[in-house]
Amino acid sequence: MNIMAEFVVIFGVCLVSEGIAALLPVAFPASVIALLLLGLLLFTRIIKPEHIQRVSGFLVANMAFFFLPSCVGVMEHAPAVLRQLAPFLLISFLTTPLVYLVTGWTVQWLIRRSKGKGAGKDA
Amino acid sequence: MLDPVLNSPFFGLTLTAAAWCFGCWVQNKTRFLLCNPLLIAVALVIAVLSVFRIPYETYSIGGDFIKLMLGPVTAVLALNIYNQRDILKEHFLPVLAGCLVGSLTSVGSILALCKLFHVDEALTASLMPKSVTTAIAMGIAESHGGVAGISAAAVMVAGITGAVFAPIFAKLFHITEPVAEGLAIGACSHALGTTRALEIGKIQGAMSSIAICVCGILTSLLALFL
Image 1 (cartoon, each protein chain N blue to C red):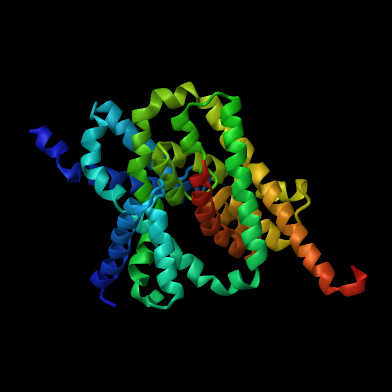
Image 2: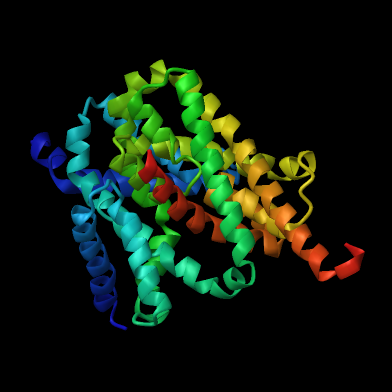
């Protein structure tokens, strides 16, 4: 598909999502609505991966570049962040193994349980 | 003479693109995890703005054009899920259960710790989505009164922690099932962790990259109840 047509699809999905986000009674990010909407269009085969392939490939390959201006925006909030730097780092660091532990154990327990059932009497 | 130049959108655009290229170059040279291109590029832009006393507003005239693309960048993550639909179907229950429990643990433990340390509301809202991928975390933070850039920083701390310690976590917590290991890495350290998961094994990498999107969506839904 024409690359501009790919942009029409992707920008169009984002535009519709902004509208949906404005209509929702709760605060929900328009970007996540766009992700869900595009997912829905893909799974219902209204849009095929080929229709958005090149633009998606470019965006995903350079993803972190698009985060840059928002990250630079932290300098505007530097005093508040520096004042709470210790809890910020501690919370970001400590919750990571906790999430690993809980997710890992839950999934492992589920898998072993279903394997046990599959093995019948041996379980 | 300098003002029209600085106030042109091309100033922010050029500086951002140049800083990004420099960040990528350093990463390529060193191949060191902490030399993350984003980290280096952000430091460089902030340094340039501070040294030349250029206000953030001037930079964001151009920077906002790039920020605008966060929506499309998040939307096309849908393609990642779609491309992995077969493996998703095969492990549907473990993926859903693991990501749901992981997202709940992440949001719950962050909120509890923020209360414990008397962290203010804006920082709490910015920290809350820190286990999910940056694009989604920024969206969640902003719609709940947080600061997107602070979320990005927290996301990076989580990502680097996961990428460095993932093999140690697996030993420590006795996680031996590849599917469980992959989902756990993706749930706690998103894309940065996934690069490590891919080195550990094929199943681990695939599960980790599925967990990125699923945890992102689940966390944004959980955030609605806060």
